[in-house]
Figure 1: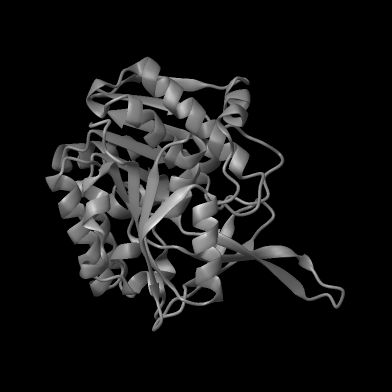
Figure 2: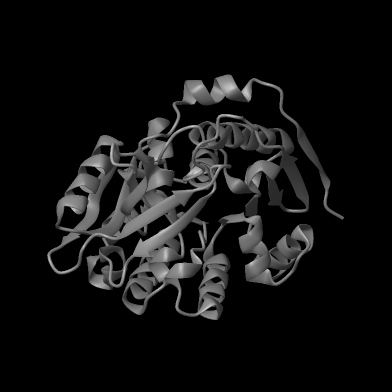
Length: 332
């Protein structure tokens, strides 16, 4: 990839407010905290911690929430040249409930929401042309207008030789038809060089229960050079060529919120790939990548929110130096 490009990574997708639990008031009513969210920007925020140059393409409302998000993204060190503000559609909101294990459930206010109103003409193609990596998900593929915008962006990324990264980040409540969701996930998989996907999403997308068989199917059909499968507390696995490597999760008893853990993991992996081309990966390198990404994901679960809670490289290295298990062998 070309080092002279302005952006290391550009991402397109949703930018929204996550309202997360923050205790109770004196009257016993739940208090919700306004946190900036949206998977693509979370990925960029992690990359910004590594001093990578990043840019975001998306749409928010010209309202109090949108102005809050615009400042939060700038403060995170993410370029906002491609951020569009709408006077017609409000910023998308998500209300998050968290159980005792830190796992989340979402209630979305997005019918419509500004993120789904991005049009083809509003996509800053010059940003993509100036990027080494282009990253996207499926929340920008739930509705026709933003789907067209996403596909135009991907086409531009392919034309200019970007490494294309895809994280489906499936949110069932946002899809009117789950078969359409699966179709768009498969479309994204057919276009990417790096697929980061949760184990449940992998089963849903391929309809294959066994992880290795599911990955093998995607490799055979789409030729994806690198597939990263995350499984929460059960760790993660990288598949490339005919090899795989599994990393155990860095477990902690301080988990309070798993929001953004997968995005943190993805951001760390993209940071590694900026210096190590996918077609030159070796076992030692993948071992390092998974270890750092797993450590970072563990750290972010001990903090509320995601975009403003990304760990610094020094924190990641400190956790990564603790006891950890990596397993792997050639795939037969």
